[in-house]
Image (cartoon, rainbow, N blue to C red):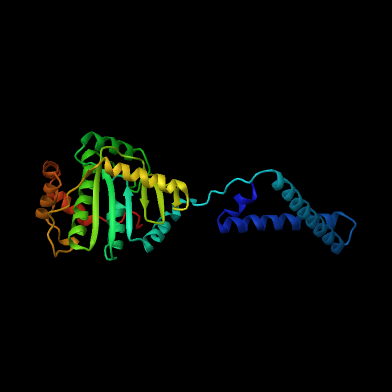
Length: 296
């Protein structure tokens, strides 16, 4: 294990590592004192001199080696996030954001956390790209994928209709925010799904996957790959169909959405047949049960 790996360990692991070194030092000193002929003080001073000599030698060798070997460029702007720290990092991104871009599948975090958080900020703009619920083969493929991973749903089994329902809820919720809050919402429907999701503001982005056991990657705008991913999201939006979010009543709360609101919104979005198939009642109920999937 190199020095950089040790320094990048969590604090509790670094403390354990230092404690282990001190324990080994104490054990070696005691054994040398008990089994040797030197007094304790002389044995201790001998160990201190040896450690000091080792440090000086290491520093000299490091200086010599670094003078002849070019340094590798540090991966500044890239941070691997442990699964347990992802929510905290999302909160940091949201705390200063006025613009948010998302490319994923359902958009549940966007509708459950991003929209409520950003909706009251001035000049707020949100653009999102989710899978097309009218594309039944695509929804079926995504359902198969979700059934194979340890997603946030904790064992829930999906079929094409269950996938489509989640996207319909996102459309309805986005329509409500676009109509009843001072926020610009652009929603796009993609003909493909991607296991990697991207959430981005103007300072950084976080790349996640559906499997909640997996770590995430945070990329700041200082890293060149940030612009590449932003360009990728832009091209995805350009190749997707934009959703008409009209049809929602004004002056109502989110919890007051009814079946007529759902039907009107989805008719404007070109999804009247899918709405009838899944039923407005089911969609309304799903809207009322919608929440941030990472709350617990």
